[in-house]
Image 1: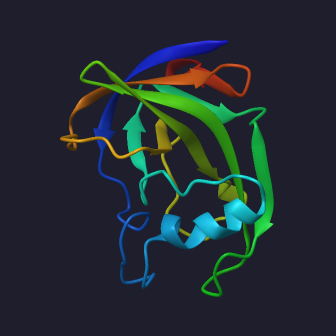
Image 2: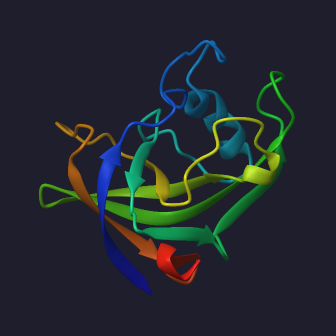
Image 3: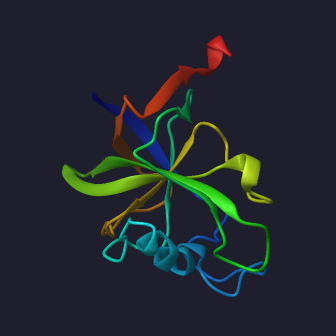
Length: 151
């Protein structure tokens, strides 16, 4: 079952799409060949993530479509586990296919995400900017939503 959620596009850590002081490359571009070898071809998607705040809700990847344990995609830190769930981003009335991208925090050394922030790999979306309102359609069979007030 899918559910559309309102969201706001926010600035992330700025490492997924471009080189940074920690990485001499964008991490998504570097990770894509590893994901392809494991069965998820993301070559047609933008080399970066959309960081979509769904606050006040939080989410948990409860039963993702794909999980790749301990991927050795860089020698700069230990292997990471990644999960993916299909989604759609809706912006200005247009729908863009994508994947919720979830680097598991228990295997991630740095750049921890807020539990109200969905990271999405999608097709390039023209004229989208930080602060823009979007909708994101997620699969409730794979992603559990919670209200912050209940935590």
